[in-house]
Length: 423
Ligand SMILES: [Zn+2]
Image (cartoon, rainbow, N blue to C red):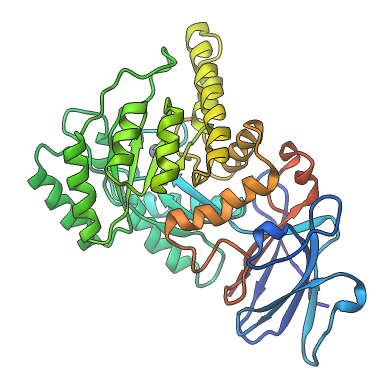
């Protein structure tokens, strides 16, 4: 029988059990799972929708998955070890946060990171993200290029410990004179400047490009009157040129008009997407454009604006509308990713993620839906689906042990109880 390492994150958070699989190990993990999170055909056998499987791992990756219908089904070849997960756990693929800002301080949301303390602060934030079970994140830009710096640091730290993979977008592209200075530094005034910025991003090794098409939400109103900051023709040209450089486009868009324009221009993902309509969601489903609804920064704003009745009322309306559209997106088959906008005022690096999961539950989505969105969809949004996402043969361990009580209510979720990764 193999044993867990106990891992005690600092602060008041619970301790997390950790297991790192080594390349020389021949290991069988016996655990309950939700069939939807496995590659292949497995049948639920328990009333909570789970089944029991044995995951055979050798040379650092899954070689076989077998469903266990009873105790005697488990065959243990000579030289293999067993790691049995607690009965009250399920094993799920690790989480992916599709939208964070490692540079922002989660208080003002605007203080960028520069100077000698930057590395230390980024390292601390990456550790907190990992403790939350988030094994990959996409940084949604800042003017100091922190995302690229974080990607470098994460790779360096991952040699000795568990750190999330970082997908970096470099500095965002935004129109000069409009919102975006904190995300991109200098705005663009012509397509020639856009081309130069894309060239620069390719040179720096960005994984994706962030384009700002709308402003921030104005919490005095439960609607947007902000016209898109680029025209459809401009947006199409940006997407086409970015595509030539192999850069998928993530677009910050609020208002139905802006989201629709982004979708028509063929972007990879729509970020936030507040105030979008059912028709636009339908178009997203047809064109396979993913949506990252980021409800938690708005929910956090509710705390910040407590006592000012006008804003409180507008914020509540914005949240309810967004949850309704999340429910509709699920029905229409829109690919949604889970993103927190961590670093924005009031959004914590690890707690923000489970708050967003609970908001998706409030929208009426099941635990299986939310866990699929958190893992499989997130991996797709980040372009990491060969490595992460579904639990599958040929993939390395990158999984979490969660207490089963989340299957009855997501409100029970207090963070992962175990992390299983590959070393
Ligand atoms: Zn953002």
